[in-house]
Amino acid sequence: MTWGIPTPLFLELHVGLSLVGIAAGLICVIGMVNGRHHPSWTASFLITTILTGVTGFPLAPFGLDPPRIVGIILLCVLAGAVAALYFLPHVHAARGVYVVCAVMALYLNVFVAVAQSFQKIGPLHALAPTGTEPPFLIAQVSVLGLFTLAGYLAFRNFRPRLFALASSV
Image (cartoon, rainbow, N blue to C red; front, side, top):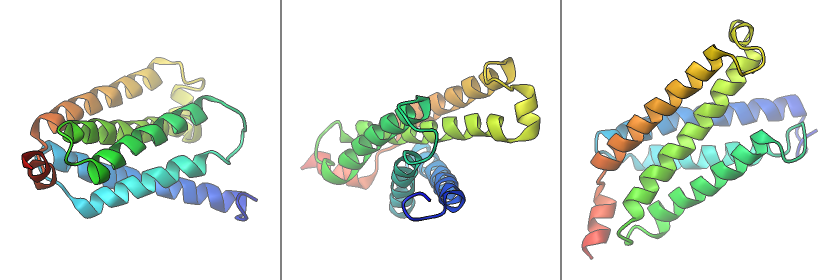
């Protein structure tokens, strides 16, 4: 049992939240790259990704291990995104902070999804059983490259009305 929920069901909830967060995050980042803001998708992305981070902590194995360190970083980055978007839009740097934090949060969620895929999906696991083989490294470097490019384009193009009004006050 995890938080009063059978552990297998809790794990399914955690994975489901992660997948919804990734899908909503992709919509948000694509929107930012195209200079658009999608408030409902953004709220969905932030909420489900926060819940993904929180629900990862009570899962075994326990202790301060790499997944929990990624979870701590994820929650800190999400705190920056939420603060910049909802509490500090009048601060000049808030737009940039939001873009960087949102893209980084999505990247971390996808990073974990790729790592979990190589651990749990048979054909991928056969390609990289220890997670140090070239196919795994190529996949992770490719994901990092795509998110770096998306982050750059989002930073350059994303100027939602929310931040434009706040910075002109």
